[in-house]
Structure formats: structure tokens, C-alpha cells
Image (cartoon, rainbow, N blue to C red; front, top):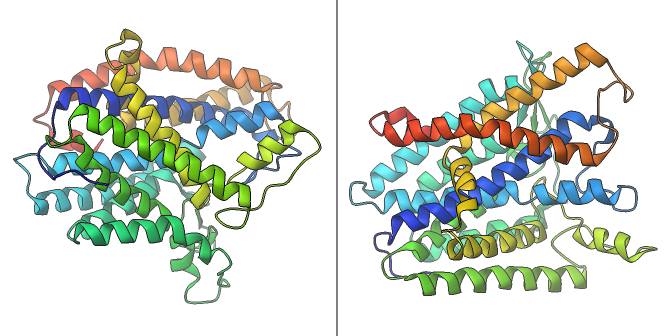
Length: 389
């Protein structure tokens, strides 16, 4: 799956396609978080219940499935490109990944968790995607010293083999409960009598994904011209999607079984109803397959002017992530203060269409602030702390 390991070629073009894809991911994430903020009365489990979830809600949630796996894959790819610069040694890359991973974990536990709860001290700590990215970066900082062939083996084992562990659980009083909740079995960890943590993103398969992204970084080197790179993106993207269809069809491994329902739409939703927490093999195959084909398309179309806003959003993902969480929480509290509850104990929208409308409005309103910070980050490369955002 690799070309020779050399320096990146055509760096500006590479950044455009990667940042544009990251920008798409940021906007899909915004859509999902608007749903989580203003559609709490219609929460969906993981996986969803295909026969009981309205199609418009199902597919709105389904689009957001792309976010975490594609973003973590791109994090691994970017780590490779960072380390391939002449000014950085393998040791410097490892140190940077370790420090940035630790920074992200601390950020998740503090600033980001507060954005979700607005509670000090918090009663609940949600260990979500930034936590998973942070731990994955720390793992990559250690694992990148391994031979490439061993990284390939490890990637396959973590992504394709972790579903073999789905039936393995440990009770709360077992010494393995906490480490296993962090690694694979989503659950609650009692920190104190008044504080508990939810391991929303068990980290084993995410580590496999960031390693895969790191390995794919060699596609963006001098020895891989654009034609070769596009071919690899196409082969891997199509291959993952074909593999998803075949493995999902036989219905024996990789996720919970699908069923033939009473209508073709319910059957399609059942077929696509895959598990995110932790991401099943089929979840990764489908989402990453789509992501790689999108990356290929964006490299082909990167000169189109309408991609520039996507590139801007993708250039400062952490700034946008923190900004949108605080704005959404504030908007919800304002809505509650003005209108009170209208959906049981929550304030919420009546229709999924409102989720899409609010997402579009917010994306437009956020853009000037994101652009200003992106320009600031590009201008002030002397500020080392900006590398961590």
C-alpha cells in the first residue's frame, strides 16, 4: 500500500484537498451537533433502530458517521507529512505527536467537556472524539518506531479483528473494567461518588485508523505522482466499499445483523445501520471508503472556487470545534430562557428540516470568524502553540 518514503510533492495542492475534506467533515459534524442540541427529544441509539427511526433523521445521522473515522485517518496522514519535512526527525515527530495527544486529552477533560455540560465541577465527563484522537496520537508516537510491515499487521488486527472482542465484558468491580472501558467496551467509569466518566469513544479501533492514515502518507510523496496517488485513492476507496457490501451481505461478521424489512427503504436503512461506538469493521469500511473517494475527487476539483470555504474550515478544525460547541450550548440556553420546554423536558425543533436550516445558517455566520483565525494562524507561524490547534 506504499510508495517509496520520500518528501511530499506539490505540498500546496496536497493541503488543499486534505483541508477541503476536513472542511466537509467539520460541516457534517456541525449538522450532527445541531441535531444533538435541538433534537434531544428524538435521541437515536447506536446503532439506530432502523424500523423505528424516521428516514430523514436516520440519514441525517448517517451522514455524520463520516466525521470521526475520516478525521482520524487524516490526522495520521498529516502526522506522516509533518514528519517527512526535512526539518523534523522521527524523534521530533514522535515528541510532537505525544505532546499534542496529551494536549487534546487535557482539552477534552476541561474546555470541551465544559462546553457540553456548562457544569463546574462536572457531574459527568464525556470522553469523546478529541479524547480518542489524543490517545491515538500518543499511541502513534510510540508505534511509528516499528517497522512498516508490523504497522500494517497491527492496523489490520485493530480494524478488522476488534469485533471478535465484542462479547468480552468486565463487571464494575473487576480490575479490568476501567482499562477495558477505555480500550473497547463503551461504558461508565466511577471517578468519585459525585463524578463519573463516559467512555463514548473506546480507542482500540481508532488507533488502527490513525496508523492507517500514517501509512497512507507515503501516497503523498515525490515517488507518487498525482496519477499514482489518485489510482491508490480510487482502488482503496472502491475496494473498501465493495468489501463492505460483500461482508454486509453475508451478514456473519463485522457488525450487528441486518434484516429484510417490510419496505425497501427500511431494508436499506437496516443494511446501512452500522455501529459507531466503538466503530465496527463495517463502519470503518463504509465511511473510510467514502472518505478516500471524496479525497480523490477533491484533489481533481481543487481549483474550483467553491472549495475555498471548505479549505478555510478545514485549516483550523480545533478552533471551529470549540467555537461551535460553545455557541450551540449558548443558543440552547437562550432558547430555553425564551420559550421554555416544548418537547417534553427539552426545547427542540419539530422537524429534521430545521436542523439542516440552522446548520446552513450557522455555517455562514461562523465563516468570517473561522477565516480570520485561519489567516492569523497562517501569518503567525512563529507562535508554536498554534501548531496544537
